[in-house]
Structures are given as C-alpha cells and as structure tokens.
Image (tube, rainbow, N blue to C red; front, side, top):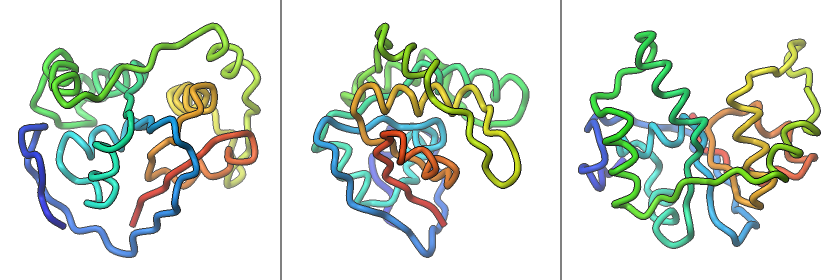
Length: 162
C-alpha cells in the first residue's frame, strides 16, 4: 500500500489483503466512521478510497471524536495528536464536521436495534454514526462488517476490510 499525505498523523503502515469494496451510489459525499477516521489520519486507507475522499465532500462525526478521546484516555487507542490537533488537521484537509439536525435525532430514535451474531447491536457510537449517515444521505466509509445489516434501513455503506 502506498503511503500518502503523511502530514495527517502517525505514519504506521499495514498491508491489507482481500480488499472488498463496492461502488457507492451516493453523490452527497462520505461520512467516516471512527475506524475509517483513524485509518485516514494514519494514512492507512486503501489508495482508491483515499483518492475518492478528495473528490467528494467528506465529513467526520463528533461521536467519532468522543470515541477517540475516550479510547485514548482508557489506553485502548494510541494516537499521538490531541483531539484539537486532529480537528485542526481535518479542517486543513477540508474534511468537514457533520452537524446533527433534528431529523438526525429522529433517525437515531427510529433506527432498529438489530440482533447480529446472536447479540443485540447496542453500540451507541455505531448507532449514532449510522443514523448520521442515513439522515445526511452520505456514504458511510467503514471496515465494520456489522454495518452492512443496516443497508436495508437506508444506509449507503462503502466497506473496506481485510
């Protein structure tokens, strides 16, 4: 994988194999889920997706920043930059902040709680980000396979993963 835009954050590299990508049908832009945001900052997104982020409006969620801050504090995630530095960096790269509207909260309230792999999917961060993507008519970029279960509820998902 070619490393690009190393000014984003940490400069680790990983090799991804068996990349599964489906073409997105949304024309409004992308919403990065938390893992995609971290991968973007660490220059770990597949090159074809990374290129597409610069051609269409791309957004991040406040929920992702909350999750990053909490996981950093709990020692579950290692990112050297502060949340403020991350926000400034995203702004400089023209990655916009998704702004929740009244309809976003209605989408959160109405999103069904699915049972995935015999377990309720109650992760509040996931559910918030999924609802934002649906309400904003944005393509959600994620490597979380569970999200594909929400496509029948209006989620446009661009999955990348191993």
